[in-house]
Length: 116
Length: 113
Image (cartoon, rainbow over all chains, first blue to last red; front, side, top):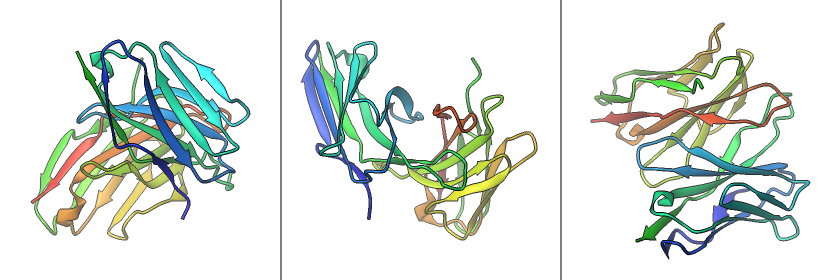
């Protein structure tokens, strides 16, 4: 079936380095993608989003890249800090053609560990 | 700013018991989504409501039901609980059709023993 998934389950980086977390999606009709950060025992926290009519979007220390040709999404975190340690999920929004907003389909998370 | 409020934060139930989880969306958000997240798993979509009507249904077991009330809060009712129902249950809310914002609550951790 259709799915959103991640290439790497774990990523370990040195403090101050840049981190790149990747995600592949299979539903070419999806029009909106979100990256979430989830700390242990907490709810997903919004990081950055991107619509399908864009290929890049930048936030504070984070950049999301969307390649629709190969259905690939990435999250880049600049100057990674210990506080960035968490599990990161990409999510794909699928439109509900009944009229409401579509629900989010999450990919498998990547655990980011930042070494001081 | 007000966030999505879920209650209770923790819940312990025995097998075959029932549980009710509550979700209070951000004010003026009319859409609520429920997700289940098992240990080490990604959140799985269960069900959603828009303007008090069910809008979409995911992998929600028949033992579970949910509804959205006139004040837009939602309740997830779980019956005949099984050990495998132990998970984090998240609620998210979003405003109307033209805004893509989703905000998640802190979740309810359900443990079935």
